[in-house]
Image (cartoon, rainbow, N blue to C red):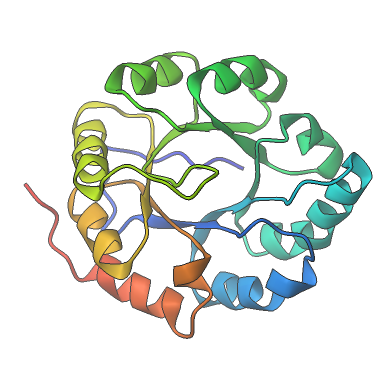
Length: 215
């Protein structure tokens, strides 16, 4: 399963990329995740896992894998590249250029290797040259900190205008999702505070489909 986009045929709206909370109990997110996946087209789910031993992590991934993949979404693991094949996931999201460069050879070409945590344009371009299937801008770090949204918007717009590798841009609110659609981000990532709330997915899709892209 791929997440690529054809820049020659622009979408009317970005596709969605869901980011889970750090999962300890798969049952605690399964119902909300199912509702989101059933509501609209979801390109990918980034499964974040609370720390544990390898066997426990594999159990959590497998508990959600069929739910995610049977709805047509790619199952990506946050880090944990070594578990991708054993868990039958579709790929991994690696944070930082060094982590991406270390893990990508074990994933590609059979599986998706995405790269986030890119602090400069140069690092983003290096990730693309190293074979990233997508780059992500604006996601929170482990402490919940993220770049200022103006910087995220500028970076996503620059990438969409100049490069063909897909761009995932993180939105922390409905207003941010709408703004990222306007600059033609290929995918909009949303965290649990958006997609798990009542009507969250419907509200996001409304924002993404009514805007006129910035020229």
